[in-house]
Length: 215
View 1 (cartoon, rainbow, N blue to C red):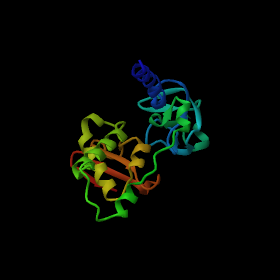
View 2 (view 1 turned 90 degrees about the vertical axis):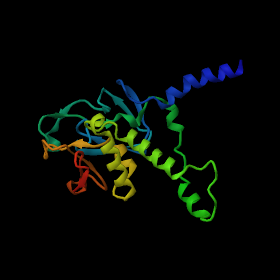
View 3 (view 1 turned 90 degrees about the horizontal axis):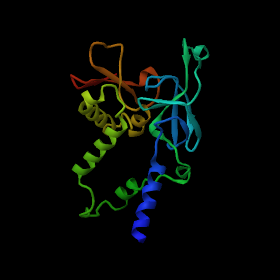
View 4 (view 1 turned 120 degrees about the horizontal axis):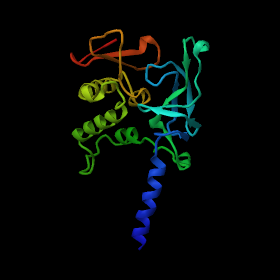
């Protein structure tokens, strides 16, 4: 009976903790810094960053992006027409329980350098496992990319290369939501993302058919 009760409790609590924004309602910011943009996409103008546990009201959700304001005249932002504030919905949670949930401390660097001669335990992940895990994290971070289903492998491999070379971070891919189609190179399948900042000089481009990364 105790085991059945524990399972039932877990079934009800777990979804509440990890529920992300998919419909209008009140939510909390679950990441340590959530970018606010003037369009539902990674190329939208960045206007603000919300701190963790900030409360927001979601008016609608489109393709993984949540609108957290009414529409307003974009003239003040140097944009013609009506605009609104949008954030990546993945980093919004509906549960107040998330507010008290602290991210685990990153001890990987300490463990890596504290005893260089330590033998690898049988339970430690192999380099192959670690590579697969990184690719899995990247895939989840960039699944909102334009044409993701068509160029999934190219996006993942390019993202992995940029992260391993220190040009981009996984968090940047999470915040951007992935790769976005560049209108400057049509009809070429060229996509972009920002690494190291949000200026034009920080744009990194990827030609998915030629597997070429350039700036």
